[in-house]
Each structure stands twice: as structure tokens, then as C-alpha cells.
Image 1 (spheres, each protein chain N blue to C red):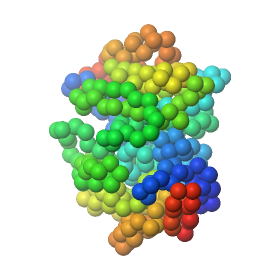
Image 2 (cartoon, rainbow over the protein chains, first blue to last red):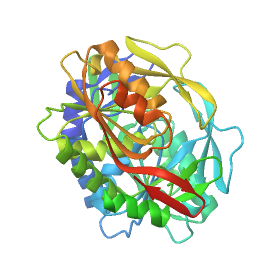
Image 3 (cartoon, each protein chain N blue to C red):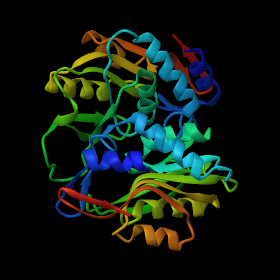
Length: 189
Length: 189
């Protein structure tokens, strides 16, 4: 998606250690007009697929998912990183490692909001190692929900996550796929 | 706002210990159509106030804030709960206690995204003890930004947060104000 690629070139900052900072428009300060264009693009790509719910993971996926959901006319469910020691109620749960933070989070979704008949679109801001999407796929699997596909804003195509998710048979639509990057230089696929 | 009150009556669940569960439409599964109506209502209430940015706090404020931001035509900044041990870069920070989780979070915002000239609308899903909004007010104060007001989805008017925030001179517009509640019974102001 040209608009997103241009924005990444203009405002993205590549730092050491394969870090791409896009916090000026994607995951700290958020450009909701750009999110609207991204949502419409996913709605075009997944038209006719019967998506009835969007599933994302806190925190930075939530804004993108909510605005994309408007284009689909469906609700959003976000998987929560559990902070409470005693998790009350009936939840699906999975462990998701964070390479950025060097931690493992327990991520939960209420059983009430993932159902066997659901046709889910997964949404996230980044796809790098694929741990977050794999967590969402596992949660959907526990519920017996169908996954229609995954909408990703930025895929680091030089990291293994995209191949791993696609190898599971999940259709991944990344709006910007980065082939390589270094400080001052970003090449898209 | 009648539409939100009716939804709370229909789908909200009052549990022991002053807990109101609205996770079916507000803060776990999210009804983005309802969020759109809420955003338009805040845009009407704060029309002409020159809001140029919305500030919220992760996680459950983000979706509401993003959709409200569309009605204002402004970007969103969300304050992050810091999970990284070494916080890189130049950030404003504040400690925010969570009564729900019995924890204290360090909450940060990059200095690049809160500026002295900003006219901020604060958005959050709940106002009870006021700790989250007080944290956002403190962050805005560190930046020298102006606060135009706070848009809250649900205020528990029987808890002290609303009075505390209004006593600071902040205009608070809560779309549903709960006067009292008990299992099976919710009374609005």
C-alpha cells in the first residue's frame, strides 16, 4: 500500500538491532486518517470472505483494529495481557513471548467472545517473529473459530514470522513488506 | 447519552465489589458503531474548543480514543504502561495505581508527542477513582500542554474520581453517569 510505504519512508526511523520506529503515526501517536485508509484496503482484500469479527492483541493493535472494523461493520475483540494474579471466569489463554521486551505474557480472551462459528480477521501492527499472530491463531483454535486471514500493517519480510504464519495456511495481507532496512535506508518487497 | 445508558442496562453486569462488567461492548469485545456515536457526541460537546490531539492510556481507552479522534480530525497519543526495564529516550512519566489490579504502573509518553501548544482532550473508558485521568493530567502538565477537557464513557459517580478531577478545573463530559448500582439494578444520574 503506497500511502503506508511513503509514510514509513518519511517518518520511520531505523535503529540498531533491526528496530523500526514508527511511533509518530502507528503505535504511540496514531494517525487515524491513515488507519482509515488501511482499514478500507483490508476490507477490499478480504471482501466476500464473511469476516464477522476482528481479533487483535493489546495494546498497539487495538486502534488499527477498531478503525478497520468500521470498514467491515463488525466488532473487535482484543486479547488481553493478563495482569491479574487470579484470572476470574472462563477464558482461553496462551503464552506469547515478546522479543522486544524479553518477556513472556499470558494472553487471554473470554470464551464468551470467541465462538465456533466465528470467521475471524486477525489484525496487528507488526509481523516480525510472528509470536503475537501465533498466539491469536492458538486462541482461535481453542475456540474452534475459523481464521479468514491476517491483516498486518508492517511486515519485516527479512524475519521468519511471515513464512511461519503462511506455512500454517493463514492468508497474510501485509500493507507494507520490508525487504531490508538499515539506518537511513528502507527497501520494500 | 441515552444510547450508551441503554446498552449498559441491557448488557452491563454488576458484580460484587462495585464492579461493572461491560466487556461485551466496551473494553474486551468492542462495538465500534457505538464508539462512533460516542465520538460524535464528544465532538459536539467540545466543538469550538480547538482540540488538536487526543490523549488516552493503554489499553482499553485506545479503541474509543481512535474512533473519537475521527470525529475531531486529530491524532491520538496513548500513554504506555512501561514493560521495558530500561526506558530508552526522552519520556514524560508518572506512576498510576490500578485499584482493579492492585498494582502501580509506570506510565510514559514520548516528549515528542506532547507539546506546550497542544490542546488535549483526554479520553478513557471508565472514571471511578480518577487515577488514570490524574496520571494523564500530570503528563500533560509536565509537557506544558493545555487540557480542554476529559471525555469519559462511564463515570461511577458514587466514587470520588469525578469530583477530584473536576476540582482540578478540568471539564469532564461523561456519557453515562452511574448514581448507584447493585446486581440487577443500575441507576443513572
